Structure formats: structure tokens, C-alpha cells
Amino acid sequence: MAIFKSSKITWYVMTGDPKCHDWLTDYCADGDGIVQVVVYADRIELLDQMEVCKAWGADSEIRVILESAQSYISATYPQIYSDARHREDTPSN
Image (cartoon, rainbow, N blue to C red; front, top):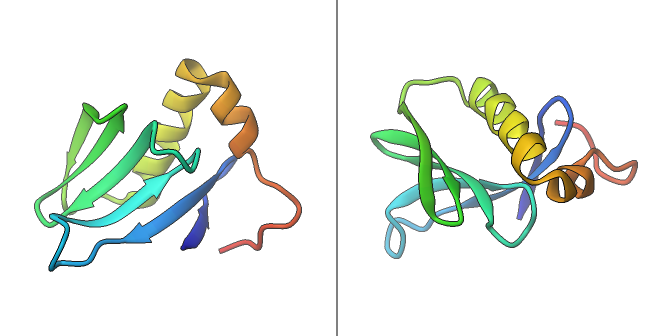
């Protein structure tokens, strides 16, 4: 599993296996998948407990989307946001 740092939080990144998954990349802030940004071939979705909260076109910039998702997590799940804040032991992108 890889990590990606947006401006304030660290995301865990998983790459989907096309043989098993319909998604390409999954960004998760909490490790449990409560809030995820999922990249599909034709769209990118912000999921909250597997429900779509917002969707973007596949050509959207992932950094901008992760910043938006970071704000959503901060407002909706303060504990997840606090836990996902950058830690000293995680390298930068």
C-alpha cells in the first residue's frame, strides 16, 4: 500500500486489479474505508460509507479532489481528520 500526502492529511492508496475490481485507484484517509476517493476509468467519486457524496469527470485533477475531500473529512469526521493529519514518520510525495 502506498501513501499520498495532500496539504494536511495522509491518504492510503491502493491500486485496483482489473481482474477483480472496477476501480483503478482508491484513496482512503482512515484505513477502514469510511471516507474514500475512488478513481474509475470514467469518473472519480467521493464516497462516505460507500455512498457517493460527489463525483467528478475522469479528467479532473486528483490533487484538487483530495483537497476537497480533505475539507469534507474535516467537517464531517473530525476524529478521522485528526488521526490522518500528517505524521512525522510518513515521507512526502
